[in-house]
Image 1: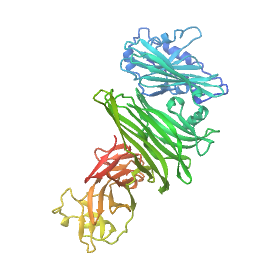
Image 2: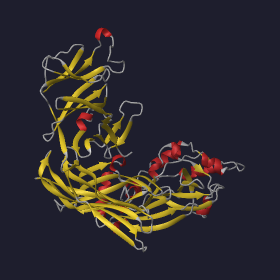
Image 3: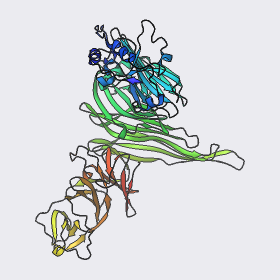
Image 4: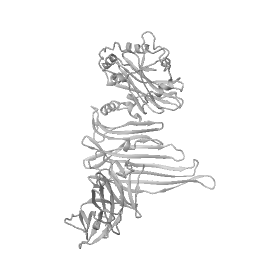
Length: 634
């Protein structure tokens, strides 16, 4: 049973504990803090608990706040400021005397002052209890209880001290894992990291211990970078940190910091921090951040098992060099082996880093076999080389891919044989103004252009909004107004509103599209390529917000409506910089006409009942065999 302390005097006393290990390295002696009355106040409340008061463990646990996992446990003296921060917890009722058998011995005055639960497993209860050991020390303990309240296992998860304090403990609690950092301040900030496994039965087993200051050659620099980011080591996937001297300047170092934002059993998700830091000062000079929502730094059934800084530099312009970061993945299935390595490129821009190539696969291996012999396997390895031509200010990058297909089988004698087929291929990465995008050597790229505008163009029963010269016609977009206010054949109730027209020099209609409704915005945008006689027209749709575009192809004096791009760029600030026609990229190859998008996040069915924000993991529409289809990985 626990009781809230409601005496104001207690909180004022604790409120003056302003110096704790949680505030960083301490090189000076902390001032003496007057806390007289704090412990006595807790004792007074404990003594007030009736002797016949019963304790229902399950009821108490069910009424205790539960925190989500993963959870960073860093409770310290600074955590106790407000009145509601304190509880008085029955020490014996939670069997804390088993963990602290001398809690009431002479000179000891331990008191439990806070608790919460964490959902580790369903078959036992996990509680974190904070213990005030003295006026200068407190610690928190993770305790696993069986359903009856018996302690299964426990482990220290945080510690803080004031006055002469030179150490602190913090931890990260996850579904089946506990990571504890023991921090010591001396000449440098030393961190000992201990990994525990929380097993299915509630026991806690140590699996690894390492000193981070000995594990990283650039420990001091990394520590400075973390301070700049306002992150601590306990928040980082430390085995995936990467550093490398910046090729353009040996006085700087590239640092990759994978920040844990979600973690479970055989699962984690990371925010990515890509930085350049000054070697002497440790100051971050350039930085790039991307959240787990878009960076694809997620490990699940396919394990993310490596992050490296590429050894190759890429001279993407006369005065700019890009560096690469690769992410490796591995599938552990024996009969469905899989591995992948993806490359991203970054370049300096002001005091930031800009990603110019995103998660481009440079190695891929996969297949399926029976575990004995019979099976099929595909492998791709790509090498990149700089080209001579430029697009949007950056040199093209040529990609030479070695593709192999292997078929293994048993012959009539039962011997395992294999056949391999090679299929080399060359493609080109071209910069589209946002990122590098891949093209076949025969792929046609379309660019937006502005045809001549026409003015004072009129058409019966049409309120003309836009008019452009499209030899030998004039293309009009406008709101169709039914004759005498009535819809007549061949128009229908659902076939009204804004349309596209082609009219000849005599103002005769050569082409009329179906109606697309009464809109606030219906504006044609034009795209063409010198290598094609097609003109692609996208009419941007909008009310108070944009919601996709209607696509037309004009070729050989004929116009055809091919479908709707029911998609927009995600624009949470609503600053109008992510309209479909501003982020569209159009190219045509053997697979058809492809419409892709130069932004990290997209909205499917914008403004519709099933509107959905998605990550742009190679999302595109393709027009092939007279059909416009959306392809994406959800």
